[in-house]
Image (cartoon, rainbow, N blue to C red; front, top):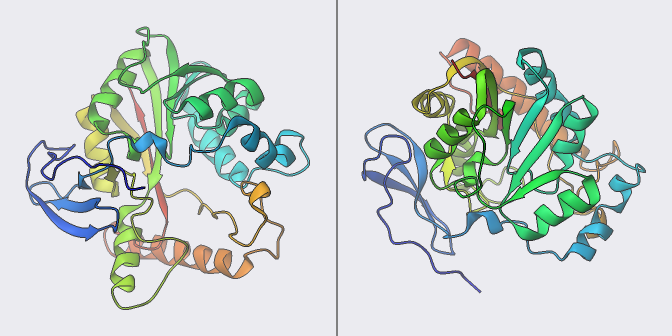
Length: 309
């Protein structure tokens, strides 16, 4: 069943103007547009509850799906990505009190705890919040970031790993997190790369599929960031950017694998062709960025590391 959508004309989350030009319309009615004024790509017509994405499974189903990871039999398919994010963040954190916003099932938080962080998660979806708390031992504030209570200056670092793009008002969320950080506290944001999606969308219109799903999917995403718009949004919220770039590719799960093992890292031969293509595109994108003044259409993700003054 298709959920009801907000009316067209939601203002740009970066500059606040209502000047979006349609880029793509999903079959469910969601519209992806680009702001004429600042270039921000977002959804001026969107789902009312973007946090519901991938959160439909019951707790028992999730336990079954993630059993190989919970028991240590196999790693999570994003484990190496999570460890890379922590290597970027950790040297800049003044302490080890970490706020993980949009902690989902708690697997990044579990890696952070293993790296010595004392983690508090924020998760709006009740099922994922319960799983993170019960199965991964995460201290979770259940609710949207705009609704939960955060004490000022109570964290040394904060992370949004594949979460900020689902937040309807990302600048407000970042400002709230900034207030919860100690002076000098750091923020790490990792999001999908909108420039990569622009390339995929251009190819889709010519009948060429690149990767699983559609460009800009899932449609629940509220924003799509380029390096420039992510940096501008972080600065708008009162942070100073320390570092930005493209992390290693996220190799999405292999569709042919048993659904019960949907988050388990594939063995080396499973989905090998897709991983090789994705890695080659990432290298080409980095070369493009070096030669063409920063644009990168090949890397599927980007990050910003910033500090609260």
